[in-house]
Amino acid sequence: MSEFGWASTTDEVLAGKDLSGRTVFITGANSGLGQETARAMAARGADVILAGRDQGKLDESVAAIHAENAKAQLETITVDLTSLENIRAATSRARQRFHKIDILINNAGVMATPFTHTHDGFEMQFGTNHLGHFALTAELMPLIERGHLKRIINLSSRGHFMGPVHFEDPHFQHRPYDPRSSYGQSKTANVLFTVGLEARYAVLGIHAYAVHPGGIQTNLGRHMTPEMQEALMKRVTTSDGGFQWKTIPQGAATSCWAATAPELEGKGGVYCEDCHVAEVDDESSVAGVRSYALNPSFADQLWKLSEEATGAKFPS
Ligand SMILES: NC(=O)c1ccc[n+]([C@@H]2O[C@H](COP(=O)([O-])OP(=O)(O)OC[C@H]3O[C@@H](n4cnc5c(N)ncnc54)[C@H](OP(=O)(O)O)[C@@H]3O)[C@@H](O)[C@H]2O)c1
Image (cartoon, rainbow, N blue to C red):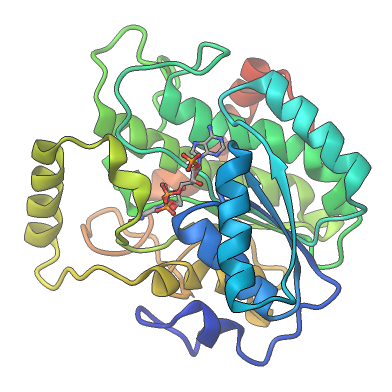
């Protein structure tokens, strides 16, 4: 049983932990939960690699963290998850610049984008949130294999309740586009990817954890119209009478917990929320993980689809 919960913060979860000599690679580290995760991990002595698609924003994030902690060990790397070519180039640079990765946090994400496509023709949310991270992780595996902690954290969301991955039409080519179900599909894919990683790499001591951070006000809502925001608030407050926003340090706490909790060692392939492993629940609208998101045969189906779509090859 975890000693932490809904209101725990990054600093509370990491208190007393020594991360010196550990390398943490975080995508989307120039904003919101990613930046806070970077700050908190660096405060415990980790060498943090902040990945993002805009060098200027990464520099601002580094400056903000350094303003509080001048000794923070921070590196930056640009990677745009909407381009396989860019991901391959960025990870090739990463393999030259860095010796190992102890913890990979696949945190970047977009939500409720209009019907747009990545450079490779993938629907934007599935392409960025899942396929981009699938390709990135494959290319970073040699560094993770050299790490000591060997944990991969995939940021999912309670949004995965919106539905399973639509294997026949993941890119909405033959059905009307819906920004909510597209986000939900991509966040279910984040959990299934976690299950797929655990099935293949637990034997090498590499473990994967999916995380729902809670509801936190960040830049994630930038693509939502005022009507969409109003509808979302109505939904969450109706389904969860006690709905409350978390602060950013509370939101990033479950990522930090999943990345470091000793009680999770060897126990990946799970979905975590509020600093504990969630129960399977196909009814609740306020907690738990849907069984379709942990289904091993869906995880295999997604793995195959993702390999074919991206051409990414994981080491066997
Ligand atoms: N906030 C919540 O309530 C909530 C709830 C459930 C799950 N989550 C998940 O938590 C994660 C972090 O979200 P957040 O709330 O911190 O949102 P955020 O403040 O919008 O941060 C998202 C990050 O992802 C980056 N990103 C987006 N597209 C990218 C791309 N193509 N290539 C590289 N980086 C890209 C963004 O970079 P730019 O600044 O360049 O766009 C930004 O750094 C997401 O995976 C989200 O789905 C959040």
